[in-house]
Image 1: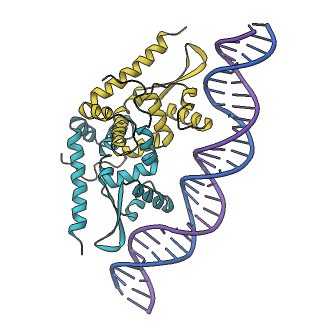
Image 2: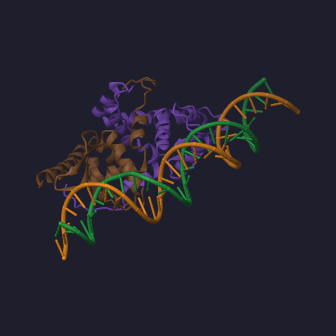
Image 3: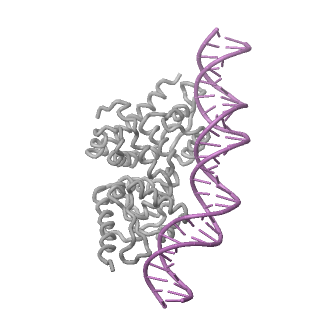
Length: 146
Length: 146
DNA sequence: GAAAACTCCTTGTTTTTTGCAAGTAGAATT
DNA sequence: AATTCTACTTGCAAAAAACAAGGAGTTTTC
């Protein structure tokens, strides 16, 4: 794996930081990718108590970055859904990796040991499991359209 | 991989977001873990032009979080070194995962194709390569002490 | 061995972002 | 038709970030 020091400079890290280098974006992606949340109201209910203007701003910035698809709920026209795109789904490995790290170092973690163990043993399997959950939520929405 | 919906709630994501859920911390970790930078002056020189007060604040917060060890340079007493701890090193997989993601989606990426390819083919090998680089920098510092 | 330079910050000051409270607008329910 | 539900917007005070300048050790230079 020979690699000279200056192979790249356009910096993927800066690109990533520009899109999700923010506490609130992090937590929104958790809610969407891991907890099945899809609507403004659900995001507001998370433990961290994001304020409404910040939530609206972040959702629109994630949409602009191509991570979320905004659409009205086919089941209820007053509700807006924010659906994760492929680009957002592809963050799952990094996000789960970060969670494994946190689980290891947070003395107060409430994550079960089994979570990190499962991811370390079979990362792709874990990712697939969460992808399937996302598909399930999608199907539920489209399937139950009025 | 059976797993009930509410297995955990203390939230690793929130823990991670609290420590590195910030653009500047992201970029600092890149500089330290990936680019071999260790000193205040080197951090200031990065393309993103962090301002001095923010840099000082972030360095001390990363130190407090246990990601950095602050020590004076044995080679030059006026220089302070910020060395990554094991806790920081353990962020490598997540950080590299994020970079692979960015490389895929940033149309202007300057990262060589080989980087993502190498990581996908052998994540542990890539991590080991960067760990070795960090060890090399460490050895250089300790070895060249006056 | 005094002066200049280097390195790591600290201290103001201005500008931007956040957090909070209240209010608006469209769709659904009663 | 009126109330409720859901998704925002707006206005304002407080906190944080960016910018510019300066200070305090340490090392180098002459």
